[in-house]
Structure formats: C-alpha cells, structure tokens
Image (cartoon, rainbow over all chains, first blue to last red; front, top):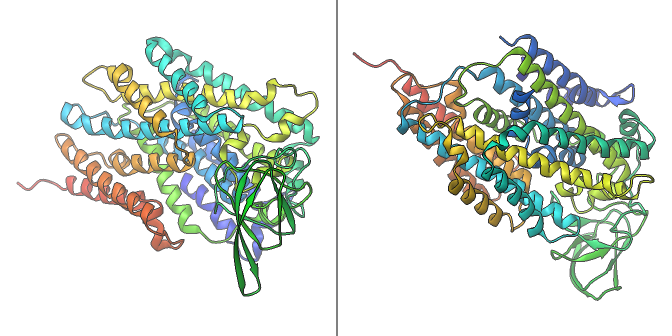
Length: 51
Length: 492
C-alpha cells in the first residue's frame, strides 16, 4: 500500500490534460497529493496496518 | 520517542534533510517526490523488517558490519562536506566547519554515555528548524499555502536588492546543475575581485567563445542566450531586478515541474527504499510497536513538512538562491533571513546549529546501529576509539575537497541497498549465512563497477543509462538472485 501511495505521485503527474496542475484551494492537485495527502495516508497506513 | 529519535538520527542526517528543501527548490514537484520517498522509505523498511536476528557466527557477521561501516563512512563524508560548504557560505574557511563537526563527533565518541543525548540533540535541532521558519513566515506575512500560491504565480524569479550577489557581490559556487549561467535577458556582470570569465555567445547559427580578464570593478554585459562560465572562487556582482540565471523560467514552471525523467524516479525509489531497509532493518531482532511506528512516522512527517515549507519561503524571499543552480548549503542561511526586521543575529545562526546538533546525534546513532550487529563483541565496535577516529579522520580529510553531499548520500544508500537490503527481504536460512555474505559481495562488486563506470562515461538520461546513474537497480537484484539460489531446497 505504501508503494501504491508513492506510485500515485508520478501517476498524477502523467495524467492527460495536465490534471495534476489544476489549482484547488491555492495548491495544485499534484502538490496537494505529494505534500499533504500522501504523507498523511502513508502515516495512517503504516500505523493502522502495523502488526 | 527514543526509538523515533534513533530512527530519525540514523535515516535523516543533515545532508539528507537539508537536501530536501534544496531539491524542492530546484525541481518543484520532482523534489517533492524525493521528499516523499525520504518519508515513506523508512516507514516501508520498519513495516517489512524486524524479527531477523543478526548472523550469529562471527564469520558471517563480519561482512554486514564491514558493509555498514563503509556506508556510515560515506554518510559521514557527505555530512562533513556539507559542514565545510556551510562554513564557506557563512564566510569561514571550509576546514573550520569540518573541524567543528568532526571534532564534536569525536568528543562524543570518547564519552561512552553520550548515546543518551540523541533525543536532546534532535530536540535542539527541531527548535533550530522551526524558529527560522516562523521568522520567514512572519517576514513574508503569509502562511505556507499563501506563499506557495504567490511563488507559483511569479512571472519570473528576479534578483532582490537584499541579495549578497547584488550588493556588494560575493563568491559564486556552482550549485547542482550544469555549472554555467544562462542569461534570459541582458545582464551586466561586474567582477568584485580579479576574475577570468568565459562567455559563449549564440547569435543565430553563429557561436562565439570569448575569455574576459576582469579587474575589480570591470564589467561584462551578457545578452539573452549567452552562457557564462566562471572559475571557482570568482567574486561577482549581478544586477538587481534582473531574472536570476539558473532559476526556472517562472513560478508556474517551477510549480508544474518538468515532464519525463521517470527512469530516474524509479531508480531513486529503489535506492532509497533499499537503503532504508538496510540501515533500519538489517539484523534488527524483534518487531517494533505500533506506538513506535506512530511516533517515528509523525517525526518524519514533521521534517518533511518543514523541508517543503522552507523551500517555498526560500523561493519567495530569496530567489537569488537559484543563482548558478541551487547549492544545499545556501538553504542553511538564506540571505533574506539576515535582513528580516526584528530577527537579530541569533535566528540566522539557528539552522547551521541545528545541522550541527543533528549531525552529532546521527554520529552516535549510526555508531550504535553498527554496535547492534556486533553479536560477539557485545556492541563494543560502536565505541572502538581507533576505528571511529580513523573513519572520522578519513571522512574529514576527504571532505576538504568539494563534493555534492546529496550525491554522496545516494551513493551510501545505493551501497547499502546492493549489499544488505536483499538479505532483509530474503534472509538465508539457518546454516546458510555464507550465502548472505556471497550475495552481499556480488552486490558490492557490481555496485562498485557500475558506480566507477558511471563516473567515467556520459550517462544517458534514458532507461538504458539507469544502471550507471543508480547502480543499485542492477546490483541489488543480482544479490537477491544469489540469495534465491541459497533458498533452493538441498538435494538429498
């Protein structure tokens, strides 16, 4: 799951029509994902799924 | 918290955490990706590792210790290079920065109970990161989101009047990048000391190369498209308000990043993930608790967030950091920080002090990490005065020559990936410890050969050039293959 989260970043960057560069609430989607969503989700995944 | 501090100290030495804002500043989303990998790789390593005890027989236990010693030696080298670069950036001789960092680490080596200081030193480092960031935020008058939005809408990065390269002019060291200044608009460059400049002027199909011997106060005017090369140590002055040579074309292009180069992304991912597995997971007996994982993840996120926000404030307040390519040490004290009202002289010194405290903590944590593999010696190798004096001394000597700290970090992690990471994922069974050593040696030889070849050949940007840029992508699978052979059932 952590690797999938990482792979999401280049995936968004390569989306057609430069979807990742669309600004939402001041940040582009790519930056929202890379700087906010992916780190938070990575922490959740690492903690919740940790045995 | 102690576990989180130890993990943070092993994984994020100053050359790694200060490279994070430098890479974000340099490449926008490309740097953000590197930061994300730096954050996720240790979480991945901690989730996968655990429960694999270090080899019990002394013969099999020797190779991992030697491999990790090599890795730690390169990590020390990277950080001492950074210490020298920061000292030079602050106006002191390089050797003084190296001596302070190496000397501090050596004193803590002599003091056997110094390991208890790791959390305290990291706390000090944390304060040293947060206070300058708050000062930059106060100076900018906006939060991180507003600052990013402002940077991402800049039509161009222009040299501010507060820049030391605008007034009075200062020595220019090439940062990461091509090592030439390409000018987007007409720009007068003035020598503030004697300097020999090389100008490559492109006029349509005609290319003219010329050398200029400038005395102090003399200038040369460059036109759009001209390239300037300068000797190390040249002191130059640039024009206020002109676009910064080496900066992205605009804030939009910085925020959007470049396209392509995906092979490098995957090479870096494998190198950093494998490095984390080896550094944090190899030979660690017993798993970690959920609480330890939560604390470690939270501290990693805090450092990651600091790096991204620091890069954004630097891009907004000190666009001159782009001049000639982003050099990591400039992020330790951006020029704007000194000019901010009400900041005083203490705040600009905090980040270099944080880096020093972080390096001292890392030096202790890395020694203890190797000590944990010393099953026969009871961890005594982590306190071996002669051994560590030699490693610190060698790294200090090597760091007298300039190098790129981040590349050394990647090299160290690539070496760890090639030699030790496969054994974490596919440990050789009981009584087959020699296969682990064999696999590590195969990884080491392939990594070394490809790394040397990469230095001597022109590495292409395509997938074909990936093994030379990131040798671990070949060396680690080769080592894993050897371990795969070891796991085959014995006949009879």
